[in-house]
Image (cartoon, rainbow, N blue to C red; front, top):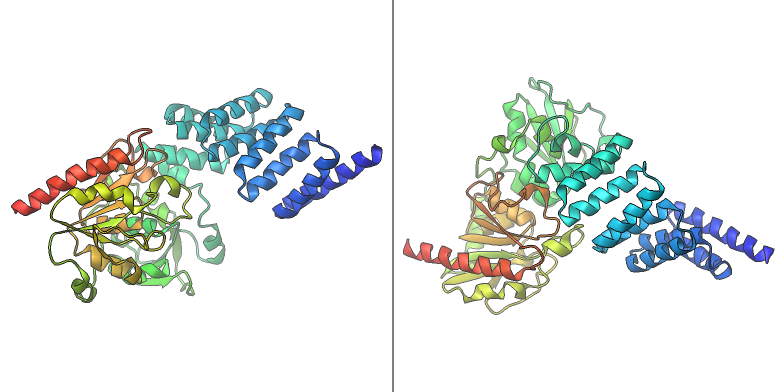
Length: 458
């Protein structure tokens, strides 16, 4: 018996080391072997949960955490881990309960308060979420995740400015850490530029670059002598039309020498942006005339030209909520007479077909300059929350954005049907709580019928 326990402990130790080293598969093998010898070893069940979570087996991970708790209900970290998995599984009541149990065991744990704040945010309990995040920060002022979660909450509420506001909390993100390590110049902190050259570093996705690229013009207005924008290669041709940019560099190219640099998404904070001071002179992007002419023969000749985009990047954390399951969800739009629908779907979903869609251009699109040339010739774009919506807004093209009820992005604020980032160009259609996409598409179809009638009258 003693040898069996010793063997189980050795396997547990080996599995834990493999887990720490990032070998989730090897850790799982060792931990399962340990549990075959010692089925009641709670710590092994808990670490097996971590290994399963690492490979995406969330439901199995939750079961392992529950088993660990059954054998030893005094380990607060196991409750914290269970809460995290249940949050990902959208089992919010269970996640809240797991956080509460962890706090009963260890009231002063900032990670637990941070997780509880995330649970409350997803439940729509914003006051409770803020209180939990601030408690985590009180316990550990440098808790980056709690500050980042608080940033999303404050930004979504439009509470942007000040030392405790959304922009300040947003500075705790770490998206640009790898770029910062490569650069040898100082970071711009908002001091007078007085002719200095500035490198604006890329961040996050294409939509972020399209939305916040407008701040390059703000740098010029503040005295920058030369502004270089580091961007995703598929955006280079399009962003050449962006005001204030003297040079564009793909992130696959060498970065030129510069006096100072800044992450792109730090510019709203550095420029003290408030809801009533968003730099929103539209359009600030433009389609190339030659590309417009090249795409013109492929556009429908008759009817109102309405572009469609129904899926975003599947790697985005909230893509299951923001993207439509299939083009068929938009089928009610086909009942609106006099409309020629054009698919701009690129990547995931571009092979989906519906007979009521007149033209599918996605497979022919090479980069965002091509997309801009198509959007410039539309009467309207209907899109989920993805980069093409930001492109349409930046072109000052009418754009209707379909937003999920669960975790809509902070930039769309709350309960608004318009956007201060794209005034006059963008309308927001939000899912009613718990109702799915049906009511959204129904509302869009009604508005499209009125939109088409207005165009016909003119």
